[in-house]
Length: 173
Image 1: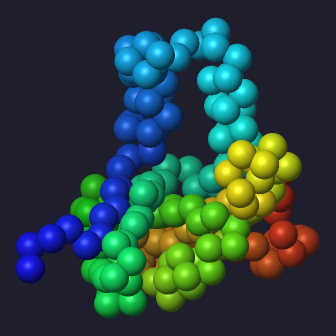
Image 2: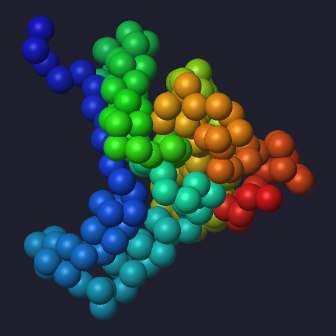
């Protein structure tokens, strides 16, 4: 019917991720009445950062901000969107794609695992939980192009295959 039902984004995390975000912050913060010196901003930034594990992928294609309007869930829209984003990552010569999920968001986690993503790290933090209402996040990876041979496409180790069953520091190996 032409209404928006789902959305997601994919990008080069090295060129368009945190470095770009940090580069525009000086211009954006004043628009929201914030500054780097604002204690509330600094506290919130530290809380947000505390909930994300470090990616073991060398140069990941980042997929994030996946959302579906409630009445359109379970209709395959996330599968279509992520399929398109994975193809775009493969076309841009990315080997690995990464996506994060809030710990406890089982519908998102299941959807990503069904699409071939594997949990490679998790990070829990009490300040994150207090601010965000969930214990932390999981990081999932998969090849952008699933036709690559396994030995050529994997630059990371899924949780459970490395020594220890859960990596809470974001370190793998």
